[in-house]
Image 1 (cartoon, rainbow, N blue to C red):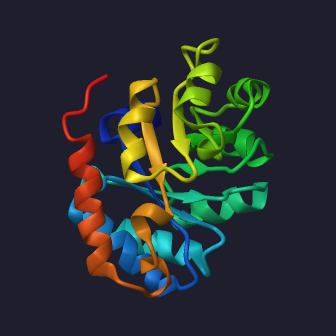
Image 2 (image 1 turned 90 degrees about the vertical axis):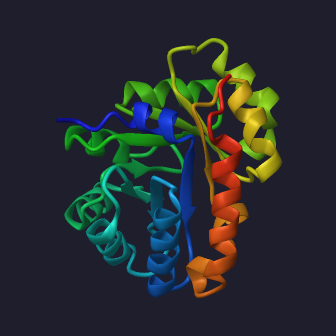
Amino acid sequence: MTLDLTAELTDARILAVIRGTSTAGAIAAGAALLEEGVRIVEVALTTPDAPKAIAALRETAPAGSLVGAGTVLTVADVADVAAAGAQFVVTPAVVESIPEAARRGLPVAAGAFTPTEAYTATRMGASVVKLFPASVGGPGYLKAVRDPFPDIPFVAVGGVGFDDVPRYLAVGAIAVGVGGPLVGDAASGGDVDALRERARTYLEAVSGWRA
């Protein structure tokens, strides 16, 4: 059965983006997020040995959680993350990995910034469009891009602070993707306890949220 990434993101509201300088740090950060109840995490391939981190998190992830790969650019990247057990892929742009992942049955959240890119990404097989970097235009820009494409599920990613979360959800984002403001330095061997506190704060912000 194919994973319905749109439904999962709509339910969870938060996609945690793990990008660090340490494989062990990425694993520790991901494990802490999952333990605190963040259900969907991605490990960016810019993290050292990211497939190893993905595989490790898949082994220990609670039931109902999803572990995916971010910054997936090429056909070879798709093969690597699929072998590691990634359940979905995320891209920063409209790239060759989108149709390849779709061909393999891996749902894709494809990075796009313009209406043309958003439309092209879905035509290439993306399940979800990641508006990136969302902070450049803010919630108003997301609404403007989404208005002509009401059937495209958008996730706001890039510079989404805690206070921004309800603003993006209010204009129709199905979820927000949060990296630095949530993960901090934990994925590079930093403070995991502080990460846990931030995770609880973000989860409280989206708990029971309705448009």
